[in-house]
Amino acid sequence: MKRLTKSTIIIAGAIVVLYGIGRALPETEEAYPRMRAAAAAFRLEGVKDGVYEGKAFLLPVSVRVKATVAGGRISSIELLKHFNGQGKPAEAILDEVIARQSLGVDVVAGATHSSLTILSAVEDALEKGKRR
Figure 1 (cartoon, rainbow, N blue to C red):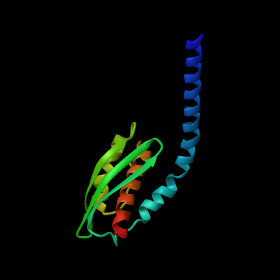
Figure 2: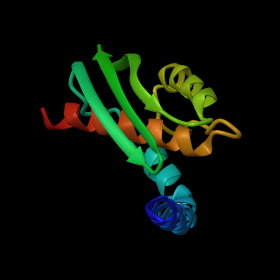
Figure 3: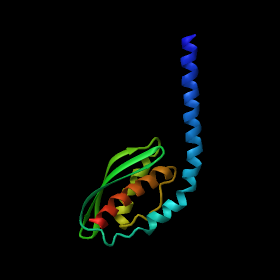
Figure 4: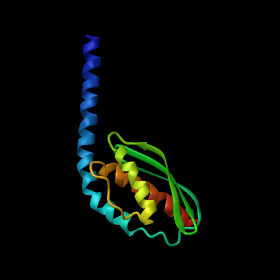
């Protein structure tokens, strides 16, 4: 009887968690256009030379980056953490950010969620360079 009760509790808990994730994801997808616009609007002017860490979390993706600015340009971006599920292809977006010197780059098809989270983490890092 105890075994049935534990199983029932575990199953009920899993259903609640999955329901919560299911409710949160559509709200996140509605935020995509706003996130793209914010990334595209970011300007590198005013970011002082230095090394800055940034992070972003967009359920279920978690990202931490280290961005280096030298001579007023983004010279490198190191991905310190990317908990992503299937969004690993989004990591290629970092090369495009460096090449264009802009966060207003196209997201990686099939990895939109991770792409936007990575861009948010880079923006978080670079914003620290404006406050320095």
